[in-house]
Length: 355
Image (cartoon, rainbow, N blue to C red; front, side, top):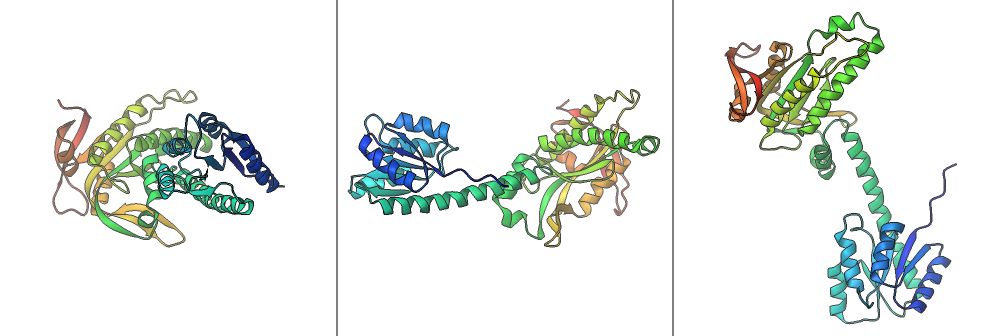
């Protein structure tokens, strides 16, 4: 049986003890959990420790006014959406404007009417519940997307769902990276299936971590390889550099991977990278879609990966032009690529940093 939800928690703040007694009685009768404070600093401390769902805040208090307390609440990311109702005997429009500027959600005049108090509290708590539900859903979405993209990219998708979660695509410059283990398939055929899976999981953990570290998006696993891209859905001016640095990090990480059960086994990866205009977006149907990149430039990156030797990173001329001031390479001349009438300039990446 599902545990009952706790009663909604309200913090009442007033330097007048009698006022607090009246507010507390009205709220507890309506089955709210009530905490009280008689000054601003105590109120702020209780907001942090008790996590109230709403604050009833007196305006005129010695030391720290209700305006100041409200401003502090709004300045804190953890409480910026916490509903605040100001209780005040002030009726001047300027005083209410001051409260709105401080971040108050509503006002209630003293002496308050019990039914009016409860109605306004109920209304604001309903709005807070909607905010909380939305944030829970966004948190779940960020968690789900976080399995495929970095936290930054996940936040962008959640912030702009109409753009990133609908069918269709857009032309944009993207740097695509393909990577594949070299010589693993024949080795895997001699291994227990669970051992092969365990080895692959170690490999994929390292390469996926590198993709996310440099702000890339993981498109898919391809057996013992991956496809990733940089520049969609979030674009950076240095996406080609991010992709190359990511590839170098992958190779560096794999050099240190060893297996106690298979001490002679070493993982070697071939990587191909290309930069160009592609179609980026959701491909599929409303029931099942993949955010991916498609186009000839993606195919070129895959062809370069298939030509890369163990431990080698091959980049095209398009990518090299974007990173040539920062990367050490060996010029390989032109590489014949299936589907291209002319060869594509190829560079073997030796390291990061100008020579």
